[in-house]
Length: 164
Image (cartoon, rainbow, N blue to C red):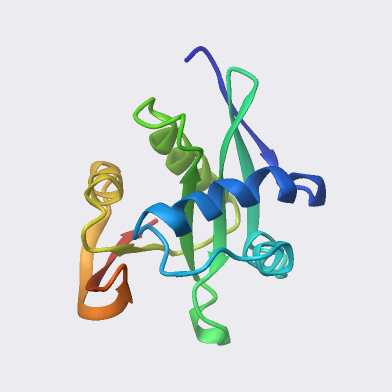
């Protein structure tokens, strides 16, 4: 991979990014949606609707490789110093350093926007995401046992945080 770039997500990107998300809905526990979502639902995920929060497309060697979201953690003002980080990579772009590049990028954006804390909410069996966030200095701060059910299994959720 020669070059990774990030662009603000646009309305026109929805139709190219929705299949990436729905791939994970169908095939993994990276998301707890159990049915593929439609364009309107995905649009609400991609565009949080608050000025400090945003989404970016990830491009590797000029090809769309996924997206990263800096989203509102909870809809109460006291939480507005924190943000949740979400990264989804197209399935043909794994293990190429894109997750690290996206996390480094979104952390810089979070610092520019004066966030105090970043959070990652991860399925407990998603070891690749856990390793990514740990590699970047995130610490496990919560473990919720059997809070989600997908593919006829109860799944844990872990939370990771990084103080900026």
